[in-house]
Image (tube, rainbow, N blue to C red; front, side, top):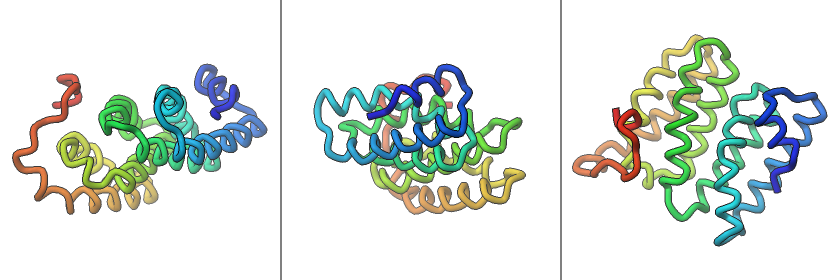
Length: 178
């Protein structure tokens, strides 16, 4: 479902306006299809998460919206939350701290908010890994990033009473746990 254009954008880090529109359309199709995929087909979509995450940080609003919704749809369907959260913790958290490109921070904030909204209670084991970066984004120089980060923080705070005594999620590296 994800076109060659999305993979090309992921590899070359550049795109024309026509390629951005084609990538956004492909991401919308991927998001819709992932809602009904199972087994190997769903696994093939999960492998595309790094390309979808790159589209989030690309800085084009049409692609950002489509990529966030696609990521939300994939998150809703994966068999284990760890599949999505490992990619998010590895990529999106560093994107949220990008001091050079505000569009990357905005994309990361929207992506986190979309996943937080979709996964809700399943995020309890990951609260400590998510809270500090989101709190940092709440003081971002961009008003929009601050607003999205504040909404994400509100979504996480309501889960905090459930986190006590929850063991850390399996498979996280020592840097992710720090």
